[in-house]
Image (cartoon, rainbow, N blue to C red; front, side):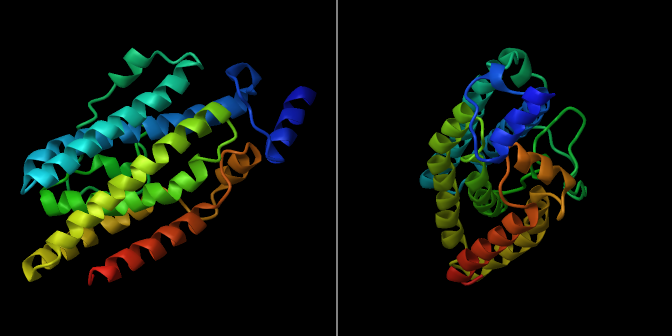
Amino acid sequence: MSDTMNIEDYLAQGGVLTAPGNAPARYRGELMRLMSSFVDSELAASAGFANSINFAPGIKERIAASRITLEKADHAERVLAVMETFGTDANRYQSQHDWAARVARDADLGAARQAGDMRLSVFHYPITGWTDAVVMNVLQGLATGVQMTELTRVSYGPLAEVFREIAPREARHAELGLEGLERIAASATGKAGVRDALAYWTPRVAATFGVAGSKRYDTLKKFGLRHVPNEDLLARWETRTAAHLAGIGL
């Protein structure tokens, strides 16, 4: 217990761990949960955008959707490689779910996770067309950008390094979405479709930030796995999203 508390004090003061053998049991559990959520979300996102490639209206858009599909799968593989150092069977892990499976469009999952599947709830909903795909990508891409400010600072060094490599590509995914959104919103008909998609996806992306005043946050902060409360991250996302949408007349 004394050794564990010393490590927790070290982490609370900004310390960094560099190998699985240094991780206390509870820290290890929270770290694995964090990695599982990211991997499952990236695999589900990749599967969702793979289905969206054929919605694309032109070659430029098909390339963008294909790039997002490929890179999200690559990001999942990179973090899964870190999980392997903790004993995860990567081959078994990546085949345990149908990552393309989706719930009914009108389902209301809130922030709930499904049994054994750690993907963010937003990745359980189906994408129904190109405008829908672009709006979802923009909103979730901006949310990922906010979350990356946390992930790139996690106290497990090898994972933080992977996230720092991933972050610029995730940012580019959001940029590709914004470019596509601006083209769609250039017409009155397109803008109407965007507004409908925003009404659908905004609350579902917002739910991925979790509840305000989360009790788990204090534990994660103590372990150096979180630094900013859920409600503050949500506020950042809302501000950034509003600014980008206002910039294209939405």
